[in-house]
Length: 158
Image 1 (cartoon, one colour):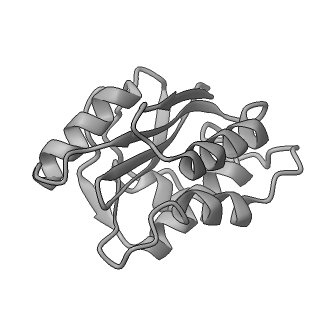
Image 2: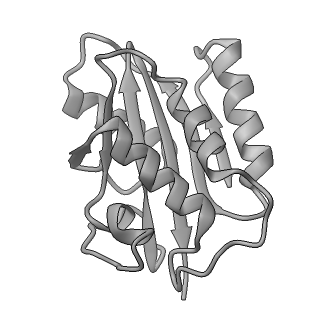
């Protein structure tokens, strides 16, 4: 996993993201990022800025609930995107998702993904998605709350 951390991020968030990266780096390809965004920007502008910082080709456009975001993240940690095979690692999918989403605790937190793929992945289906990387398959969660934006994005090839 590529790790991208904006210089204006607080130490707790940096530690959290680095801990997640250590846990999943042997299992997942993609990007983990956290960036400070100007609270005066629109949500669209913030998503665009965060996607660019994380190296995505564009921002995700589908808004999802916190519960859906947790399900997407858990599915990505548990199974690969290409064949939905269980990953051999010992990483707890639920705790990894909880740890990432915990960086965005506010009731104003918003979550985004790039289509149906992440939402249907754990059910053994592919679903439609708009690619945001050059990989064959990609999906993840972008979270935003109180001037902080986080990216947990996974790529896979078949």
